[in-house]
Image 1 (cartoon, rainbow, N blue to C red):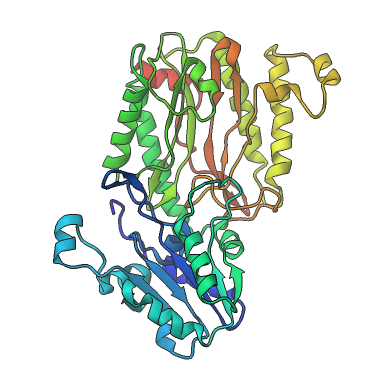
Image 2: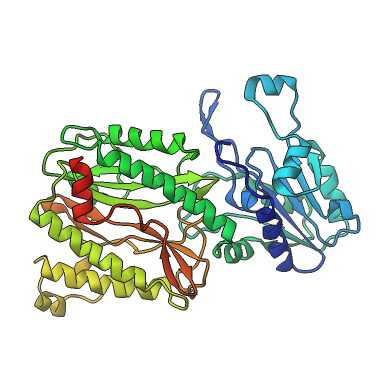
Length: 429
């Protein structure tokens, strides 16, 4: 791992909190992510299952976690299973956790080799009534691929059909939405790395540069600062490309007079940052670009103030849309009279602003959580209003990461350049 060691108390406390919410006479089982095939004999870079990492800190494939707090055998109440390494494996694929290293990382005293899992599980299940299984219940998730935890759940139900099976996802969603102080510091680090990358490209962008060259500068800065890499596929979208919300190509030339939209975030210790900025390719906003940019920025500043304890994302998003609607009227995109005549089910602003204002953040850039639940201290959200005028080739999104506290919102990206004058001044250097 590129990131520095994490205090295992984080994972010890996470497990304690999870155990408090389990029913009596229950066990819970968690699997690492698959090694996903790329092509031939290659795999994509491994990324750990966020829930397993949250509970153990183990960042390695072929790992299982078994929690059995009521097991008669005290040694089996918390077991980590990792793959047994050997000299040949070490030569070809590098170092794997020893049992001692796995304990030091996770705080779990009982560490066994993975090939012991089935035998131990059979013994533990003999005195167990309930089994918590983990699946991906993120509302954004959709895949045709049966991932490892889903396959494991189906296999276990076939082999042990008369146990009572329960869902761990609601418990973990409730826990993961509120960040501990250690988690907040890891996210701050991801934000700091993201800032260094953005400041780097402010002096790099100019007419004629390719979008992928900008991506390369960002990737360089991320990795040299211990980020695993990007917390999601980076978006470097110039001109009309910025009106494609999840623009995937990053392969066009940045032209004089255009804007370029960045949607980037470093991942540090598996925790995500998420930043959006929009800058002029030639270093100077036109008056129209400046007016549009400042409209979005005004809305963002007002929206951040609404990220407070007790509000909900759905309610706050509706308020933000009204603010953007007012700005769109000032920009001449439509009139107040047009708004009065609009179909309430198809508001005019949706043509120019068609995405949400905020999403949960944490171990996943689009983290678990419900947009209807009241905000609590310790929750973390993006704040990302935007404006997309395809016919003018203007796409603007401005995004910072906001921590909810009892004393109001805290902007974890407050030091990253955002004002027109600061951006122009830094680009001029």
